Image 1 (tube, one colour):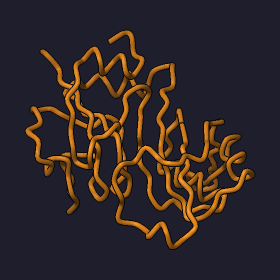
Image 2 (cartoon, one colour):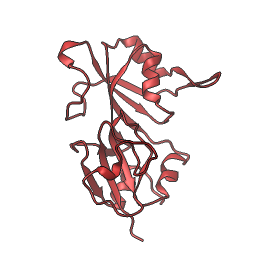
Image 3 (tube, rainbow, N blue to C red):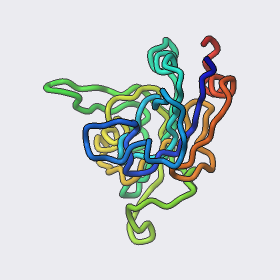
Length: 198
């Protein structure tokens, strides 16, 4: 069977799934005729935007997230204040947040920098940037705890106002508009993810 692979710029306010028991905006509402068996690899919550991978190949999730080699993901994040060097260094070195009853997680060291302009081509329905202090950060992670980026920012007294995933390894959001889908070949997909055996 020939599998298919897609890049999607997931819009704000949409979940990363085709079926839900809740009344939410679903991937199936996009103006695209996905083949049977298409599913999202990983997730972005409904408040988050950006690069989401989809495929008909059920093995990809295991190859990408359960292998021995971690895969980098870059997020461009709008925060509600001017960020100082101490906060950036804290994020780089690792911060701690609660993940359960009396359970805490300390993040692994990661790449964090101020980015101006961000790799985001389209405005979001959030804040009037010219009226309030703000900073765009680029955060590259190789781990993905639930709401990790938002919790990392909270740990250094910052609030996430917009979160856009701009890349997964060498697969990039590029100039895809929100809701736009691009199909790519199998070899380009796995080469982009730096997966050599599939």
